[in-house]
Structure formats: structure tokens, C-alpha cells
Length: 172
Length: 172
DNA sequence: CGACATTTGATATAGTCCATAACAATTATT
DNA sequence: AATAATTGTTATGGACTATATCAAATGTCG
Image 1 (spheres, each protein chain N blue to C red):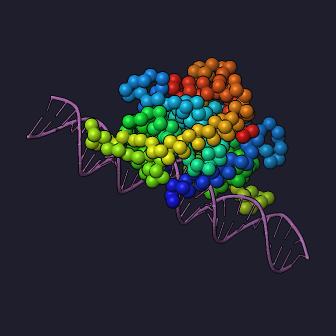
Image 2: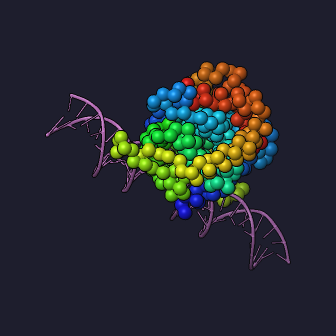
Image 3: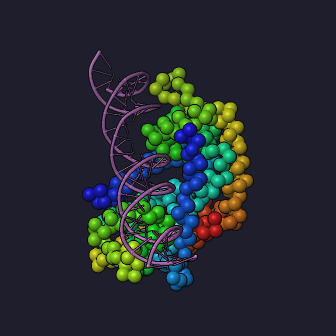
């Protein structure tokens, strides 16, 4: 119940940002953003909130958050890994990853299997249902979410944006 | 005390992301990100965390978070506004803005003045100290933070990135 | 082998951020 | 004058993040 509420709650969220920031016009109600519009961090955060909001909307039928989707993606592409490895590559701390996995496992999207080699670790595997949900999620993300992004930005800009963000995430 | 700890704690944060994501190489330790690297939201979030981290580092001497800096900037550019107006343009909910203002006011960076017209609202004003701190913060942000971003991305890319993020934050 | 350190998953806990409901004081509406 | 709406505020809860600590299992090394 706590789990199923998560995606819905997040969807309902960040409505405060809807109150348009505004700039340029010296209106009575319009406030001047000033150098705030030139602050990359500010624009980054606002853009990220909007994009996550749209992601949640697009993938709402499957009740998946961006973080959960990234876990499923990673499990599919990297079979036979344990919790620490998956959590680390996603920048999730191990203690916090436990509850995330509990949620996914309780929905039968993945499972923990005790490793026979190292009986401390849990090998993470996608269930059949997990693979099915992931496949449907991929389609929703590609056809609705990313498609809209590409439409708004233009294909070339979208690619350039991705490249710059990757560079920021790495060489910074 | 809670206030002064905020910026420091945030600085010390997000060390988990330091464990390099990795892709391409089919190493033993390197996990495949797969379509995750093509997900704009994923790159956006990681980039935003890195940029905020750098912002905190650069402006650490002044103990200002990005949110606090944006408030000071807005107060300076928009005198005579009340809490609701400032909070709304920054996407902060009024209840949450109260504690933020308490922190800034307790450091004598701004002050609430009861409006004579509408005795419900508080007109927000920067104190002299607030203006001085803002001026120093602006220099740190421009010379250290943004300068580094421009260096990494290149001036043209930096401008293009800002434009695209603004478009995402608006037309989305 | 046996003492000691390390790793893995997990629990507990605390802090920050975000969101909603509700309230008193004040102002607007009718 | 009665009612509604707005402003700042408090209380509260949920989500996300970070640290310390633990037991079980494994690794190291004398």
C-alpha cells in the first residue's frame, strides 16, 4: 500500500512549480528573475523536476518511479549482480536500496537469490512479470516521454543536451 | 545552529554518486548502463546533483545553499514583495518558506516588515549585511562556479544548454 | 588452524525537502 | 453586517538521503 501510493503521490506533486516563474515584463505580478535565469543550477533543477513529472505521467499505468525504472533497466542489462553493485552504479546507498528492493520484490517484479558462491550476497534477478513490465515501461518512455522531449527540443538539440549533461555528470 | 549546519552538511553530501556509473567497457566491475544513458531525466538528475555540489563548494565561505542564494537574488531584484510572491516565483510552498526566512532573518540577511497597506502581509527586505553577502556570493558564483561550468562545456555550449533547460522548464 | 579485518545485507535513526490541512488575523465581497 | 478569500503560520506526514551499527559470511595472515 505504501508502495503503490508512491508513484501516484509523486505524480500529484510539484504543482507549486506551476506558478510561472516569469521574467522580462515589468508587470505588477511578474517578478524579475534577474541573474537567476543565467544560473545553470537553477535551470537544471527546474527542468529536472518537469521532466520527472512528465516521466511519472507517461509511465503512470505501470506505477513506476524513475528510480524504480532505472533499477529494472539495470537488472535486465546486468544479470547476476548483487545489491551493492546495482545500488552503487545508481548512486543509491545500500541501506536505502533495501526498501526499494522490498517494494519491487513485493510486486513480484524482481527477486533476491542467495548466491551459492558468496552466501552473504543476494543475486538480483528480474521475474517474468518484471521483464514484462519493463518492456511495457520502455515503450511508454520511448513513445510518450522521450518522444515529447525530442519534439520540444528537436532531435539534434536533444542529442546535444544529452551529451552535455553526460559530460557534466562525469567531468565535474 | 541548525542553519549554519545546513550548507556544510549539504557539502558533505552526495558522495555516493562518486562511485563512477561506467558504461561501454564490459569489465567485471563495470556495469552496463544501457538505455539509462539515453534517458534525459537520468542525466538531468545526476548533472543537477553535481552542479549543486559544486555550487555549495564554491559558495561555502558564505554558508549559502542554492535555494538561499536564489531568495537573496530575488529580494534584491524585487523590493517590496511579500512572502507569498517570493515563494511562488521560486516554486516554494508558503509553509516551507517560513522556516527558510527564519533562517535568513536570524542571520540578519533579510527582514520581514509589516505592510502598512495590507497588515496581513510581510514586505521582505534585504538588510545591509544581506546585500553585502549577496554581492560576495555573486562574485564567488560567477568567478568560481559558473566559470568552471563554462570552462568544461565551452561558452557556446553553456549558452545553448541554458536555453534548452529554460525551454524545458517552460514549454513542458 | 585461529584471531582479526572486511564485506554484505539489514535495521535504526536523523535530517532535509516537499506537500496538505488547519488556524488566527486581516482584508475583500456581497 | 455576514461571508468569503488571503496571508503568514503551525503541525504533520511522506519521500529521499545519509550515517552508525549489527550479524552473518568471507577474506587475510600470523
